[in-house]
Length: 145
Image (cartoon, rainbow, N blue to C red; front, side, top):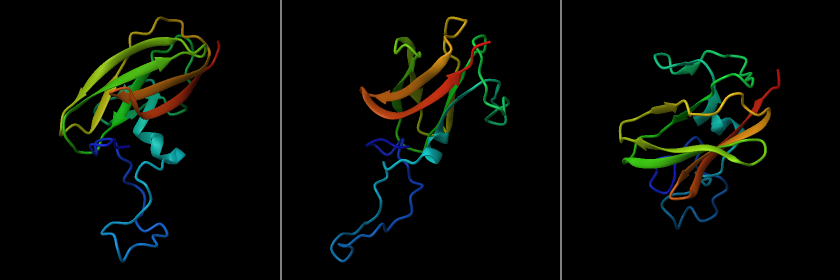
């Protein structure tokens, strides 16, 4: 993921997606913002975050109402930026939001939000915004006990 200042752009796409004007333009390819489900591994929610290994130790990815979820973002190199992370519960109520500052050399950020426990069971949404423009979104399921 990279936004307009190339910080959250998805550069995993191969260049040259049926470019009919290659003889005219100096760059051709798929839109870098053409995301597929496998690209959203750059914005993840889980529990038991291991900062040394930079992965979630809850390999099953199951969350219950008493778990404390963590949001993790992977960044491409680029200029400093401030992004807003918004957590939305299954009833479409904003449970919490906060700003994160991403330095130019930062590769991974993670934060455990101050959510009230128990979490409401259902499909939660985490949105990543910059200047109220969406940079990314992921959903995760909180299972009832």
